[in-house]
Image 1 (spheres, rainbow, N blue to C red):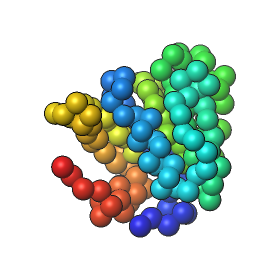
Image 2: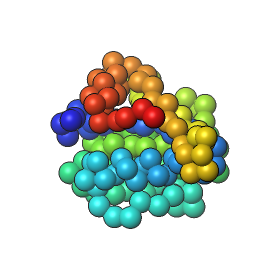
Image 3: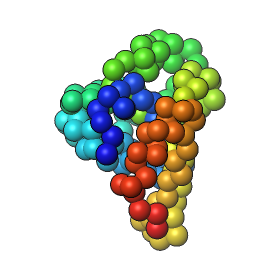
Image 4: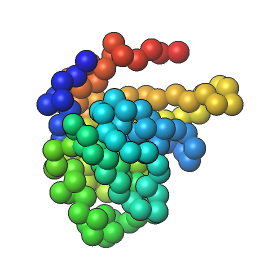
Length: 138
């Protein structure tokens, strides 16, 4: 189990087609972090913050271009004390080099989903390694 300080400031980039489970993944992340509130897609709000022992910032950049990203204050969010989950991060290069990448996809059954988790840096590798015992691969 990861200690709170291990994940403070972590960034999770979520990619995958519409309906592949990105927001559902963030719901589980919020529960794991002890963040309060109902987690919903921030598609129209762009950023939701969920308070908890380790705050969760949920960002959706589906309809956002590079100019609007600057206006969101995303840099300040990414450098904050909480965990930031970014849906549709694109390729604009604003993510820190050290982040966790989660690629969501459809599974074989109607409701099946798959997630490929990749650590992009030493710190993220420690986070992913710490989670290995909590996840089953099916």
